[in-house]
Image (cartoon, rainbow, N blue to C red):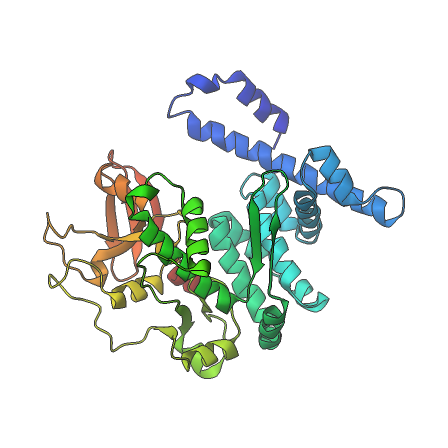
Length: 404
């Protein structure tokens, strides 16, 4: 790739008057230039680290922070990304070609940092070709789950110990921001506790959103009010329980980890097998065991809204909005009837239901997008009003199991 040609192409284009047909190509050229620049940044950060190690230069993070005009925290992230790419040249090659983003590289760097020893890190880097293929085909959020799946298998023996260390390491700090005069709170919680707190806050936000005085407020503003209400009392009428939902396949919970294991919280955070087994015996934990039977998931025309059992079944397949490449979380999605309940007498059956975020729900109805679902594989084809294919995707969990 010649970045000079790409830059010249972008400079020669009238960007403010670009047509709809030209925009995809221009964005592609920009992505290639951005990827090339990111690899240059990685190489420079590695050189800064080499000079620091030899005593010939200032701390690498300081040089990066000054040179890029970014915060020390961002500079540390850049330094860590450069080190990770040095050990995963296939990822760096894909980044230079513009096929993946710095977000993908940071996902791998974060996973490496969480492994306990050099042997596990070396084993993860041995999988770099496979990981690079995942990165090219997946969004950063999907790639994060793929990397986590590989890393979890490498760290399986120490999973329970890590869980206990997380519990001990949990912190909550607070103080005042002298510049703004606002108070701040920051917490790092054990995954169990985070799941409970997050669901309480989400439920409180949903209740606050119904109040007329909160109209127009952003979600983070509502979350701040929800946090105060939950801690100090006076909360809204929310009744959603602070449950922890665990997704685990039957073979894993019965016999332990295997090549296609799925064992995680509903938002994709991983957990040890022993923790999942403990949760399965706890009254306020809902284990969603994949491929199990015995639960009625079809109610036909007997109800318009998806039942709690159906929502749990969908949640066990979908991490996010069903539309390809959309990272909006499942709990922030609406359950959409492929055949509309009113107009087309569509049943409230699992084969007719999909989680769709508010943005894409409007596109389906007002924007006249057409959705076509294969009930046997849950493959979803999305067509634009002109008949062209927008995306083709499968639920995150099913796609993960197929890849494994």
